[in-house]
Image (cartoon, rainbow, N blue to C red; front, side, top):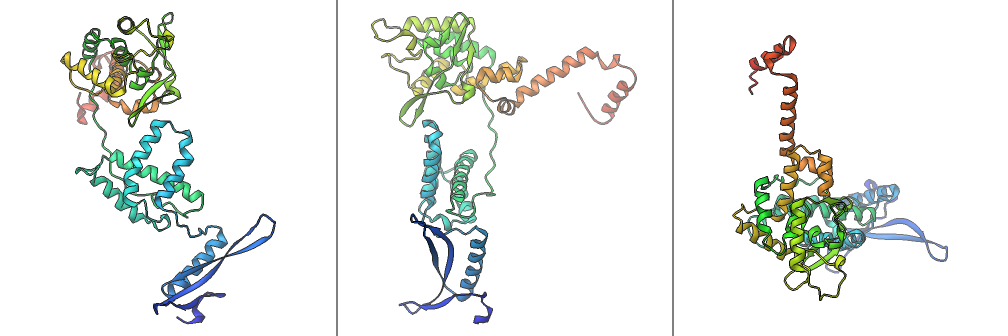
Length: 407
């Protein structure tokens, strides 16, 4: 390529390496900086390309980016470095459990591409990552769930957003990546009769009171963080103040999951009776501790109950009662479903569970449909049967039949 076809002011030079190979090099003027003494310092960067054509194109693009303020200087930061920077910036506001979950979700990304220079990361690399995550699960076959893959890519996207804002890269290559479809899982819940049978069976267990709190829709961590002083017998409520959750091999005590988690949950008579049983069976007078500060759920040694041990005890009681096996967390879903199907307003149910109303409505769409059908039936009862309606309404009913609408 001739000198005349280069951009005006081109400073591209032909360079012969020791190996005899030819390279093309140019210097790029960067925005000057002012040092600590107030002196303006000129800055340049040397860029080398394999061919003259590549050098011409690179020089034109780089100059345009510098002029527009979009130029990103070469950086040796890897994907691992970017993830570390994002965690350092965000984790100050995370709970230990959130930090643990996010770091676990990022672990397979680090294993797959952690040492790759982030400025060389391309959309096709993220596509390969998605396929890799979808086809592997901790060395096993079958692949991770779509939800797990989606979480991992969302965290990578957030980390790259921060890298863009800090000038490490000029675009986020993870945005717009096609993610696997996440299928909604059908939740298994107990009926009111099954929930009642569980409560009856739990009365023979030393943790009857804790199990009864679970049947109010409280999260496992909230039950394990509940103390006797949180119960107000005059008002018949328990105040949710603390949550105890597993973080790896440790159990961490902290505030509830969200601001909505800090709430009061009413106690009915069966729950109060179960709490009385647990109080009698777990209190040890010799323990030098303020009774109000004592946790409700304690193991046989008087120590705070571990989350996995509490779940195991729950399953043992449910199995002994001959109940269908559901997850402990599905008791919470059972409570939400029963309340909604009983016609309780969604905002009231959300308040009892410490949930977001929008999430509640999207999660329990089936219960909403049941309630909606009951509401329409009530409307029909108020209006009377179709045979009692005359005029245009009867015509509409007939039209529905002709259109193939069936009851």
